[in-house]
Every structure is written in C-alpha cells, then in structure tokens.
Length: 194
Image (cartoon, rainbow, N blue to C red; front, top):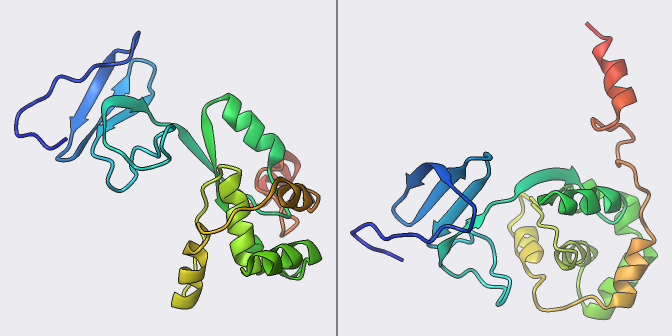
C-alpha cells in the first residue's frame, strides 16, 4: 500500500467522508454520521483481522471502525447481556480484568483447573483462550516476563464446546469487587458525597 502519490480510494456505498487524515501507512476518515473509517497498511492489526483469513492484511478499501467498551469480563463476570447488546450496536467489548484480578475463586475453580490440566495449560491461559474464542479482545497485564510470555501462549490449543459451556456456568454476573460504577443506584449514592 506504500505509494508516493495519492491513490483513489473506493468509498463504501452511501458513505461520504467529511474529514480525512492521510498517514504514511494508513489513513483515517470521519463520515457525515460521525463514524470512523480506516484503510491502508495493517501490519500491526490497526484495521483488525480480516473476516476471511483471520490475519492482519492490508486493506485498500475503507473499513468501519467499531466503538470499544472496556468492561470487567472474565469467567466470574461474563457480560453476556452486554456483549449481545454491544454487538447489536456495532460496539466491541474489550475485557478489563480478564484474569479476574487474580481472584482466588477463579484460580481455584475445579472447572478451570480441570480444563487447564486437559490442555497442559495454566488456569490463566484457559481464561484468556475462553475470551479469545468468544471474540472478546483482552488486555492481560503483568510485571513478570514469565507471565507475559504465558499470557501470549494461548494460540496453540482450543477449548471444546463442552468446555466453553462448563465455563459459562461460572458466571456470577456481578463485578468482583461488589461495587460497580455501572450501577445507577451506586452512582446516585456516590454523588451525594461532597
């Protein structure tokens, strides 16, 4: 996609760009409805994975960029309803606290331990793989190099439908800390403090 001269870009039908920012390797645009679009180099996945190949390929055609809603999402708080609602509105859920903040109930779960043993993986790797198979991107942080390596080593196995169903039974459908900034009643109570 590298070119020293401008290249005509085929815009999607019924889309009119109001603002365009041309970069060295990819470009961004805003349409009349305020939606973001991008095209060009995709070497770092900035345009997302292609639907056909599951790889990061360059794309000369503008692609719509989804909104992202970062939520606590892990086997103990699975965000099933929110993921469904977000998908209906073209929004992507990104997992915050994908490893359940190190919660003992998650890491000592007989379900997760059994699945991990079956695959020769850790409980953390099973939790991350579970998110990956649900199509939920995650940010799993660590200050330990060994754990960072462990976190990325989730692409060499796959959970069965039965294993995914077992993990689905773990959902407590509430935040791990018990308090939620998404709970209107809690927010109302917090707003009373001055």
